[in-house]
Length: 286
Image 1 (cartoon, helix red, strand yellow):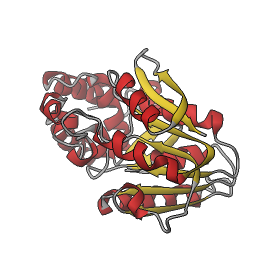
Image 2: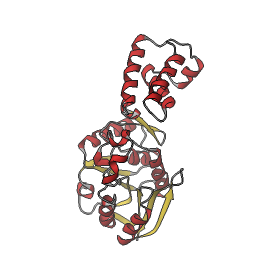
Image 3: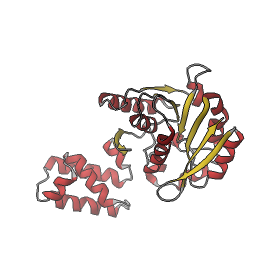
Image 4: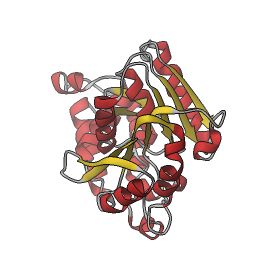
């Protein structure tokens, strides 16, 4: 079959399996298998797909039909204009999370010290540092597997000279316990912590429920466990005037605002994502 026929076949297979963006995923998987971009597909639809590539495409279509996430199959995910490496050991970066980075970019100064809690793939911290200069970042996660991916992304960006003179260290541990020294303080804390209610996890899409690490999803009975723990100790790890930026669930703004206020944060604001949902909360410590 040629590109056009193969692409049509892939779309039909994924549509039959109930994949919501079947056409897009079929194209992206075809690009991944053949090594060609969308321009080739559209400009030369008559190009023959080799038997080897056709067989590999069938195999990867079968896996996607089983709701294995596209990003796990390709091993990468675009976020903030960067192709990050991902696996089933980390939460797949979502476009909604770009709102957190964009908001943090408005207030993070060149040369700032940044702490990223529950760093996962490292995409938040590395993206922020990619667009700033000479910052010093620490990313913390309790999962050694996640940190292996984060360090791989650090190596990738470092090879591309993408940290603009900044330095990054990823540390294993439970939130602030991972930090080297009691007096280590930061100008900015960012986090996309687990915030799904434990009882809601089974209702999530299979790509998330069955393939994202549960440890990156489960925020406890009310989804707020990590916000309480992060906020409680944040003032001890922020410089005066330091800021915190947290991703939140769309129905958690009031609860997290109260948690931050109780911890001593002021000028608390809620930022909506591009769909109009509450997505990021920020505050300042005096």
